[in-house]
Length: 123
Image: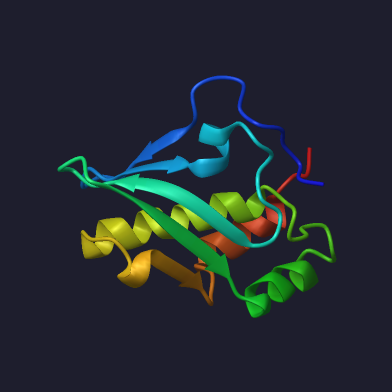
């Protein structure tokens, strides 16, 4: 069971420094967040063209965090939404373009994400 419930108001919109906008698909649909390591986002570029981008977590990344947090952060944790959205924002900012095939696969976390995982609260 995911940690959080659907947004009751307008979906969260993250805007990158170079003008890309990221919105969580499940918040638009008002359904619970995914809990399987596969996150769908609507991304709008500065010219207002939208695409649905899928961010996938590899099993190695999930296992690494589960071990480092002694099982406190599981795949259903909101931590993974935070990481997926952050990695997507970083990609858009660094490449100034959508990921190839509208998919971003996360094989490794940034050091700051690993530190965040250690401090992440489940409440």
